[in-house]
Length: 240
Image (cartoon, helix red, strand yellow):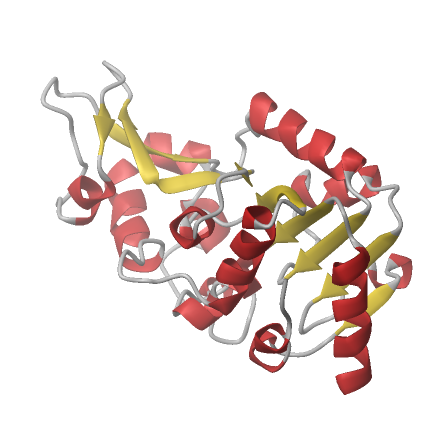
């Protein structure tokens, strides 16, 4: 593994326009469970499958049940950025990153200091009234009971992309532009099976593609460097 870490550091050292692409695995060391690990959301038992609960149709038809699940299983407001979030932010501060594209909705990249963040699936930190459009802090959702409502009576909806909903076109276009302009792409902590987000990797035509993930992905054979290990064994040994 030490050889791979050296290879990874060399790739990062030579990268002038690096783009990072992150998934749930990046935030597990901040105490946020991923979706498909043994302890993740998809292996817990509920009255309905998680994919059903966090869908647009379910939100429309059973909003109270949606929010019961959402508060308990998708809001981790005490989580703090870990060494991976901080390293990615350091590359931006050094002027060597085109940004970070993330499937995560926890806001930890921004909390770590990254400013060029493309949140493909939105953020739990942004919440809006479906009637008047007023912004509401996430604590309003967390501390509410039943269906959270605005002063106007409208339902407050998190700015997260539910199943059956499309990605924001501006965010998507920005992510594609960053990938196409990058000479190095580092993919961390994602299974690369959730589309359309996973398909963005196809826009990369730079010099080095690095995949860092505990488990196999459909794109492993395309990587110039494949590292399959926990982030705690890798990231703290890297530097800008």
